[in-house]
Image 1 (tube, one colour):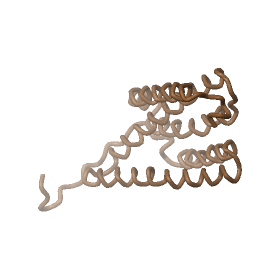
Image 2 (cartoon, one colour; image 1 turned 60 degrees about the vertical axis):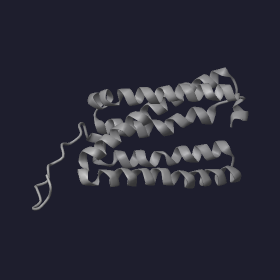
Image 3 (cartoon, rainbow, N blue to C red; image 1 turned 180 degrees about the horizontal axis):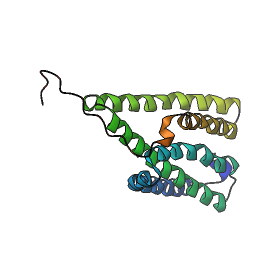
Image 4 (spheres, rainbow, N blue to C red; image 1 turned 135 degrees about the vertical axis):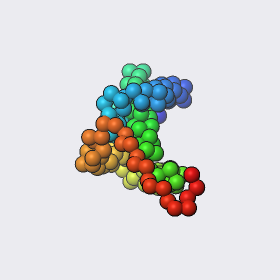
Length: 175
């Protein structure tokens, strides 16, 4: 893809650096965004931006103009992905019993990180069968699935993180 875009390794590094700055900004501003638009909408927007952010990559050609577009797009995508991810973890931690926090986070990490090699192998196979742009288009379309699921769930309307009900003390439990 870099060859098709005529991007040098340095240009790619600059694009990634600008994208990374967007991610840092998203992490720093996540609490403010969630307070302003709600925790649920923050999560939904984070997921919704990702497939839309693939469109410039699918249309991109060589030249500094496209490299600039891709850098800004990546910054916006990582901004929202990070704000969404921060909001997701905060919500999960708030609703999960403290005794299960470690298991909850490890299960989430295992599912997301464990899916990456399978996704990479599938994308590689598709790229061999189709081409890189067609594979990216398939990936962008698949990214719409979680958006639809979130829009159909109660998460979309969740404005604040619900307070966890304190479970009654169990007999013989340590304080």
